[in-house]
Amino acid sequence: MPSSAESAASPLPGVDRAAFAIAFTERLRTRGARVDLDAAGTLARALAVRLPDDTGELYWTARVCLVRRPEDLARFDAVFAESFEGGMSGTETIPAPSSPRVRDDSPATSDSGDEPEGEASGGLPWATLSPSGESEDEETHELPELSPSDLEARAEEPFERLSDAEITLLGEWLATLRPDPPRRRTRRRARGRTGGKMSLRATLTRARRTGWEPLTLVRERPEKRPRRVVVLCDVSGSMRAQAAAHLHLARALTSLLETETFAFGTRTTRLTPLLRRGTVDEAVAKVTEAVTDRFGGTRIAVSLRELLASRHGALLRGAVVVVLSDGWDSDSPEAMTAAMTRLRRRAHRIVWANPRAAAHGFTPSTGGMSAALPHCDALLPAHGFTALRDVIEAVAAETATRRTTAKAA
Image 1: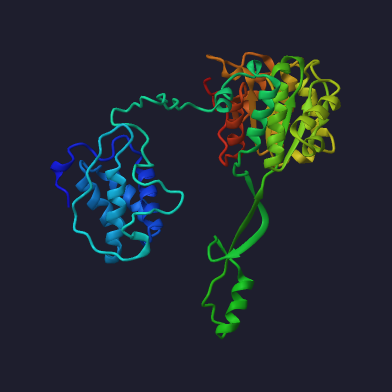
Image 2: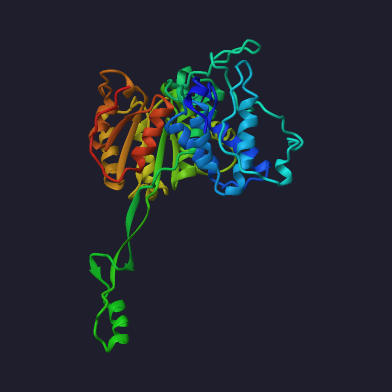
C-alpha cells in the first residue's frame, strides 16, 4: 500500500465521483475481472462519504469495494497503476501504489500491457476539471441557475397578460391534473368485513356451513359513486378577458370528472357535447360559434331560472355547481336571491369563482354577488391558471364550508 507521503494532493481533483466509479469499474471488467453489478454504486457511495486524500487511500477504498476474488488482485493493480501513472491532463504524474502484486497469467493481463481495442492506455477518462478548477485549452462553463419552468411561472399571471398560445398550453396543463372526484352515497350497499350494519341474508348463508351457527358476521356499508359536477360559465361582455380560460377549465373538468357545462349571458347554452369532442382549440372554437350571446349583456338570475326549469335541471340535483362569473347582473338582487335559493336546495355544493376576488381588499359590493354569496359554500378567485387549479381542488373537496372568504392574490 502506498504511503500518504507519496501523494500529498488529492488523487481525484475536480472529478465526478460517479463517473470515476463507472469508468474504473468498466476498465476492470474489460481486463477480465469479475465485478459485482452494484460495485460501481458501492464505490460512488464510499467516495461520497469521504474523498481520499492520497492515492493510497483511494487504492484501498476502490479495492475493498470492487475486488471479491484473489485472482482479480493482479488485474486491479494493473488497471489502477495504468490509470494513475498516466496522470491527468494538466497535472503532474501520480506514482502508482506499491502494493504487493499477485501474479496473473491470464491473456488479459499479459506483460505486453496491450489493452482492448477502443481503450486508451493510461490517463483518467473521468476527469472533468483540472486541480485549479480551470482548463487552459477549454472555456469554463458555469451551471445555469435553477428556476421554475416558464409554464408554471406564466400560470401565476392574470389572463389579460397571456397570449392565445400560452392560454392553450396552460389549458392542457389543467387537463393533466388528477384530482379525487367528489363522491356521493348511493342506496346500494356493499358487503365486506367492515360496515355499520350487518347483512342478515349473507350472514345466514354463511351459517349454513357451520350448523346454522352465525360464526362469521357479514357487514355492509353504503356504496359511493362519483358526484356530478355542473359548470356555469359567464360569457358576457364583462368576462371577455377570462371567458377563453374559463372554457379551458370547463374542458379540463369534462375530461377529468363527470361534468356538465353551460354558458350563460342573456340565455343558457349547453356546451357538454362540444367540449367532449376534438382537441382543446377545436372545442373552444365550436363553443364560440355555438354561444350566440357571447360578450353581450348579463342576466344571471334569468339564466339560472331558465336552467332550473329546463329538462337539464335534474342534472343539478346533488351536484357540485361551479359558477364562473364576476357577479355583475342586470337583474335585481331579489331575483338573484330567489334563483340562488332554488339552486341551493337542489345542489350539493356551490363554488363561486370570481376573477375580481383576487384584488386586495375585495368585498362583494355588486348587487348580484352580494345576493348570491350567502348561498355559496366557497368564494374563490379565478384570475389566473393557478387560481383555476385551486378551483379544481375545491371541487374535489368532500367537506362543505359555507361562505369562505376569498383567497388573497
